[in-house]
Image 1 (spheres, rainbow over the protein chains, first blue to last red):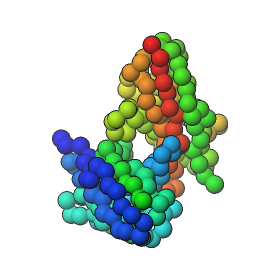
Image 2: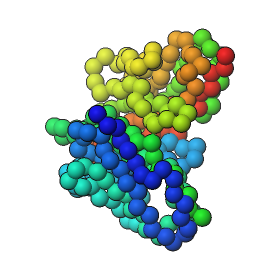
Image 3: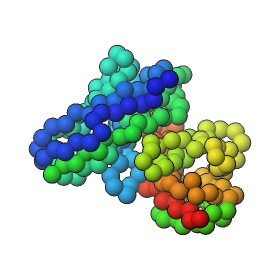
Image 4: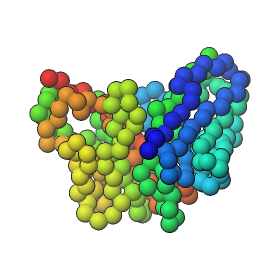
Length: 115
Length: 115
């Protein structure tokens, strides 16, 4: 059983650029959630995807968007990068059954630095 | 605003000391509760979870937590810490009123266990 993987590990961008982060969910999982963890803070929920549809969204602007693919992998896209977008971006996968989720398994994260 | 509060941001203990980390939340209704741990250089991983039933929950590595509904609390405990427990600890709450299944995290507690 493979765990959650994320790519790239680290990324440096400049203000105004766009970025795409990738996540492969754990085998058997059908739901992917994305979180932003700023330095010294707990992770903050960005959004969740289930069956290729957005299944919930946190307090993030529309320039944060995502996709889930038929194999349950996912992308997080951020447009018009701002300095405050510098953070660790975490992907978590889980199995959604009977209208509820279960434990979320986290990947190692992508460290994004915006200059 | 609804939130998750972890009272201690930094805790330093000697090996064999007892540990209690506080967590309070402000969501009404039914909640699911979690403690996650992040060891240095590693992924976030689940220590324990509470969905329903016995409010005293046992997790991995000798950790336990008690859900006290009247106090909106879910404190983490361990009778005797080891140097290997040095890590960042996060309390997280999923309100059942959520659309989706978003983990709402506290800011975390950094635990340092000294020999």
